[in-house]
Length: 200
Ligand code: UDP
Image (cartoon, rainbow, N blue to C red; front, side):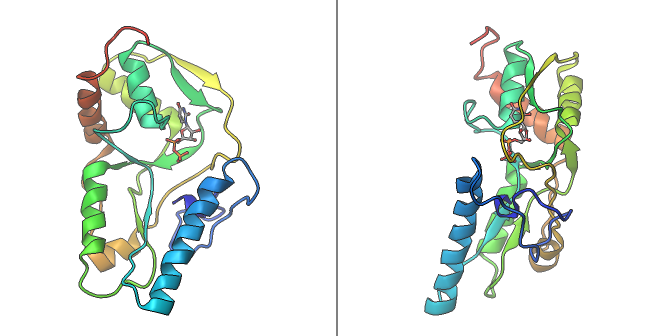
């Protein structure tokens, strides 16, 4: 989904070309993904390669690296260590979080689809949440008010992200099945076995 940059259209359908700053701090991420689609699609067009392009939106679940800095892993590890949750900005930005099992199911359906798929396909959960509401959902699951600290918003942090998954629904008969609360509960249990309660 990074190819959409800071989208001016919401939800984002595959036909939207995105809104990307080409020279910002985040640009190598956005433009790297965009160039990847270009190269893959050129191989399809000029060499006939059977390429599939999945536009993956925010994904979470067991096996995340506790140190990779994503919001779900950061918040869960911070809560387990009894540290304050680090909200970047005011927490009003949104993301749409897809549980890893759903995402993998979508990827396999796209990979094994019997016909050529000469266009990108969004894979993600349309259940859009603010970062502040993610804190609220985790507070419920931890059964306590989780303290927060506010940190500066990274440059070019997208304000909204929400996939339009009409294409995946029609083409792959796919849509996410795991609700956020259930997916977060499973993710917390996975991290709980690996993170000690003492501050790092
Ligand atoms: N974020 C946050 N606290 C953190 C990590 C991330 O508030 O400890 C915010 C981040 O600024 C962004 C959102 O959560 O707005 C999702 O960040 P992540 O890196 O997980 O995904 P991405 O920005 O690549 O969609």
